[in-house]
Each structure stands twice: as structure tokens, then as C-alpha cells.
Length: 71
Image (cartoon, rainbow, N blue to C red; front, side):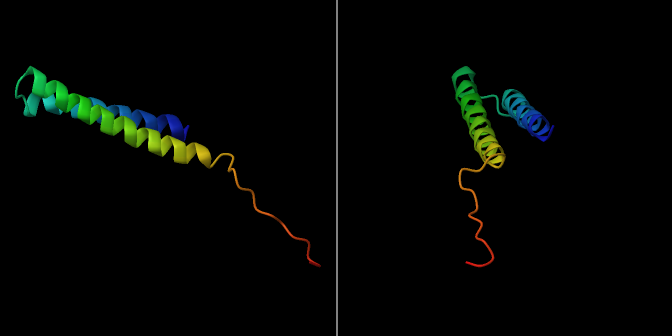
């Protein structure tokens, strides 16, 4: 459940960022498109980094080595 909730948060962040560019920083079609690409690339990069870290905790690649008590 946590993965989907945080993913929706990132999606909402991308939508709000895109809307703010259109309404607050309207400087022409090509400039707006560049700003939208930058915002969406940043949000996707942050989400991907979070998803990799979150998913890597499910099955770690390095397992602890347990030693017997007598060793």
C-alpha cells in the first residue's frame, strides 16, 4: 500500500508543477515546454530513485552471515 500512496504523491507533484508552469510562469510555448520537461524529468528521477531504494529493501542482495555460538 505504501508504494502506491507515495507514487500517487509523486504523480500529484508532477501535475501541480506542470500546472504552476502554465499559470504562473507563462513565457511562451517553447519555454513552457522546456520547463515542463525539466519538472517532469526531475519528478520522474526522484520517484525512480525512491522506488529503487524502497524495493531494494524487500530482498537485500547481501544477507547477514550468522555464526554458531562456539565459533
